[in-house]
Length: 256
Image 1 (cartoon, helix red, strand yellow):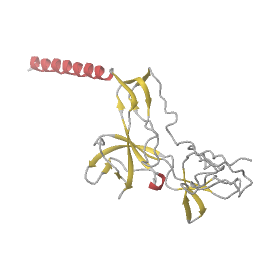
Image 2 (cartoon, helix red, strand yellow):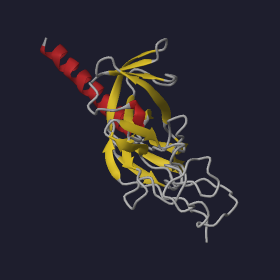
Image 3 (cartoon, helix red, strand yellow):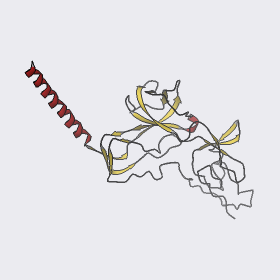
C-alpha cells in the first residue's frame, strides 16, 4: 500500500506540474489587438428590478461576459439670455457614471440581460444609457494597429467609449487614439451673414431652423431648465447661438 500511495503522489505531482506549466504558457501569450475591440448596445429599459436591462439588440452578448454600463448625458442647464446661459442647474439619473457588471443570462426573445449583481447607479434613459462589452486579455495585449473606439452617435445612443481588462501587462506597439470620437463639435452651417444689429442677431441661443448662427458643440447637457417642472430638449430648440451648452462650445453669430 505504501508503494502504491507513493506512486499516486508522484502522478499527482507530475499532473500539477503539467497544469502549472500549461497555465504559465497560456498566460504568457500575447494577444494582438487593434481597431475597435468593443461592442456597443443601446439600453431601452432598466428593470423591473435592479439586476436587469433591456437592449435594442442582444447579438454578441452572452452569459459570462463582462460589460460596462454607462450613462452618457443627463445634465440640465439654465437657458436665460444672460451670462448665466448654459450653466449647470441639475441632472437626471447619473450622467457620466458607470459600472462593470457580469452577465448572468441573455433572453434573445425579450432582449433582456440579467446580471449577477444589482445595478448600483440610478441611471435614467433620458440621459442616453449604453452597454459596452468589455474584452479580457489574459497576459498582455500587443497593439498592432491604432486602437480606438466607435464614434459617439447621439441618435443611435452608442459609441465614444474604449474599455478593456488586461490581466497583467499591455505592450504598446501602435497608438491608442480616440480623438474626435466623443461628443461632436459644432456642425458646419451656412447662413446669409446678416449683421447682429438686424433683428437681434446676437442671442445666446437659437433653434436649429435659424440660419444666421452656427451650431453649438455637443455636451452632456440633454435638456434646458425652464423651472423645477419644465425642461425643454436641447435639440433642436437650443442648437445654435453664441452661448455654450454646458461644456459644449457656443456657435458663432452673425457678424457686424
